[in-house]
Image (cartoon, rainbow, N blue to C red; front, side, top):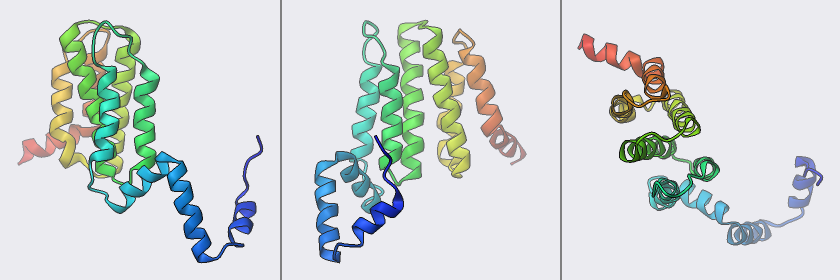
Length: 180
């Protein structure tokens, strides 16, 4: 399938009146649920309905030990929410929430497998990077610390990775706390 070039699209859109462009956008939003979610998020950034929808998708994946965890569903929910949300705090929230679900899951059901621990620790690292990049440390440091502490005795190197990631990204917060 050929790529749509910006110049081609601009040329096409320039043929419309303002009213026709508005109508075109309204039709697109009706046809594409992600566009509707994007505009809801953009126009009401503190609304949590869309965040909660994606949290439920993630939470369902950690539902029962007898079910197979579908990692692509978890990662897609985070990615899709990141595309539709304009709220950086909520994007960090969904990543931290996912890790909390993973830690709760392994604490409830015991040892899982290497892929599980690699996936959850990778999301934790990504969350920490995102938190740092967007100056959200104050809002998330306590939850991230609890995740690190709750996972320190979990096997497969998971606990070690969680400690390492926490101190790599938020260790300076500990030092600041000790100084005060």
